[in-house]
Length: 274
Length: 274
Image (cartoon, rainbow over all chains, first blue to last red):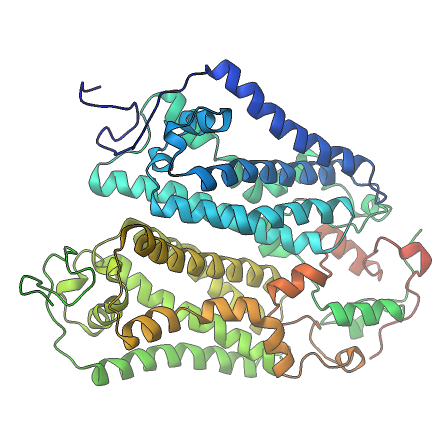
């Protein structure tokens, strides 16, 4: 590092006003981070366990996943509130952000794109994550739309996060991450990758969880029989969505099921098994 | 404009290599743009009119809307391919981009965020728009998920587009749009606003189209009875989605309807009316 470099971030020329090195070690910071996240995730998992809807394991995973997202939104909210001063603060959350910023210095330079993405994430996707957790725990059918919306937003957000960084490096040679394995591959790539894997890999998760078993077995499920973590590609390829609330209610009230395009061939005459 | 300013864009200090003023007037450029867009939209509308699924007017609007999005993706594809040279080109598409860039000069400076958003839009959301048009025309149930995904992406993309510009101006005083009404309010705000209004205002569109009539009337519809342009807020609040393909197929094959959480109270015993 050049002697004139007043901070450990990349690019060395980045202007980070008031930067002060962390006073706590990572071994003291990480447990705090882990505890706050674990507390929110555990609360959601317990709520799911006690749900009247008798959720499946994959449903409980979904509740825990969106609770994890929500807990991270709280950390991001701290960042948005303190974005201009975080580089000089020494509270645990600020030190965690300064540690993470070693993988992406844009967090300490109030980069416009970063601030905008984080703000929308905190104020829009955060509350939607919380609503999704509630919908999953209550076995509400609204969970499926909110899951698709949140998963799409996460996927798009991470894609832009990776893409802007990569493109900047490709076009201008500027790197925002330190090149060490820990910062680039663990922090920058690894910590964000779950928000690519989970939305795209829901089908795999369902398979691992044994949720893709025989339809006959699923017919005995007490919940709404829909997947907890729908995979966007698989849904796009083959899902069957019915989305008219008024229509659905009218059908339900009259004991009718939803009509389909070719219903005239096989009008539903059999009751659902208990 | 300062004498040293070699281009009409904002900020005046923006570096736009090789810029050459448009040689054609707007009255010659707009008809070309209108014709290419109208051709794609009309083709989709005609396909929807001839669909075997006997689509409702709001379904045909959905097909036309996503075709409009797709046609604009073609223009954006041109931009991505020529982004570094577009400022000096004189073909009609380049001149259209130079005209639009008066409302956002980031398109002529290869701004990293703009290039990334446009690239993802062209290569991901563009094909998904085309698939959505096909799904709508064919009356496929996959349309509902792809509509939610595309609408979420459009909404997030426009939010970031507006937000980055606004935040840059707020934080640094830099404006990318010329301040004249035509450029700021018509081009910059107006041309992008439909991608906020349509995803958020689907419920209103359904209402205007008379699609929110009585459920009894909708029971007689020959298509799948689901809304063509679901409103994200209304869907999040009250939709009823069922998303397990295997499960759905098994139910359909056995003449069973989808089970719901409280099905034991009112097992569906009535057939669907013809």
